[in-house]
Amino acid sequence: MSLLEAIILGLVQGLTEFLPISSSGHLRVVSALFGWPDPGAAFTAVSQLGTELAVLIYFRQRIWAILSTWTRSLFVRELRGDINARMGWYVILGSIPIVVLGLLLEEQIDSVFRDLRLVALNLIIFGVFLGLADKYTRKHRGLEDLTVSRGLTFGLFQALALIPGVSRSGGTLTGGMLLGFNRKDAAEYSFLLALPAVFGAGLYKLTDIGGDEYAGWGATLVGTVIAGVVGFVVIAWLMRFISTHSFMPFVYYRVGLGILILALVSWGQLDPEGGAESQLGQSEVIAEEQDTGDREEPEPEEDPSPEPGAEPGATSEPSAGPSAEPTATPEVDPVTGWEIDPDSGLLRNPGTGLLHDPDLGMDVDYDPATGLATNPITGETYDPRTGG
Image 1 (cartoon, rainbow, N blue to C red):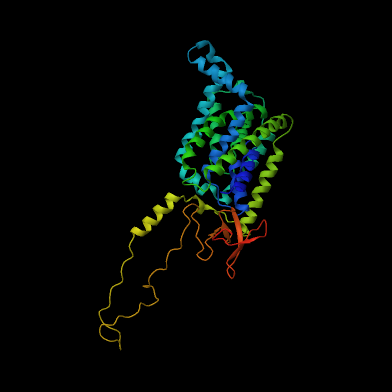
Image 2: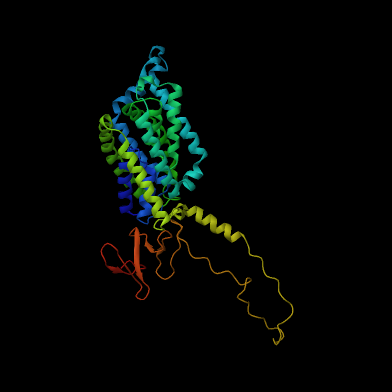
């Protein structure tokens, strides 16, 4: 992943994490629109550490009150009825659904759930649910009305965000309003409830960065820092906005974006699974090549009778039929899993069909007659094999 990709995806993560429009869905869509590989579930999870640090800073007083009161309530019975002590338990209990389902569905989260058609449908369907909940529910409850059952219900709605396009904040806000909570308190509990799950997922996925993911350590750190700074600004704005406004602007945006994605996919402008090859890390590519090598092709039976007119002892040339030797397997880049073009040494982007320069982090034009590639930003030509 190039520095430019990391900056743009960090901005997208920070802008969308706390809005009910799905940050993971936007990361997936933006990468596809630019012709970049899918940044991967690990980049998404780790970059969310930056936005959750923004939550810690913005709600630092409330979080400290919850942590200190909950800890002391373990030893002081009189504190167990305090709202901050109870909030500690509600956050723990509400985090259980997403932790359990996240571990059970890890393989699907990293693969089939990232299909752009599914992302688009989730943007539309859960956007409509958000709008209906915002318009027709009675919002008469605050955080002091939380109970164990309501906290678990919040958690179940949060677990829906494991599928890109649903939105963590959108899911919990929808669930909260269906339970009768006002927008501001539902949003605050949504942000607090995300802390254990997001930090846990981010730390768990740290081991995937670099070796088995398209995004390396440098790009991931840049994206995480940018996401945290932008996320803090978005939190402050959103908490003021929902005090006097409804969520309907986000509903309209979700539905419009979902329809646009489906249209682009149906017109062939977007590959719904584009970039899936990038999820094959180096170790997986090596394992796949070894597995292919272990499977020996059956040797064709020799025909002892010579062909008519052939000299004794002469061997006939193999025919170009089904028994012909298989063609050589194209060389594959161990990081992205993309095919390497033998003439230029560049990668072949499966989403766009163009040659891709990993050093520039973008598709480039290549002239086979001169052997030179063209930088699409500067317009300068260069030899992709030497970089000059």
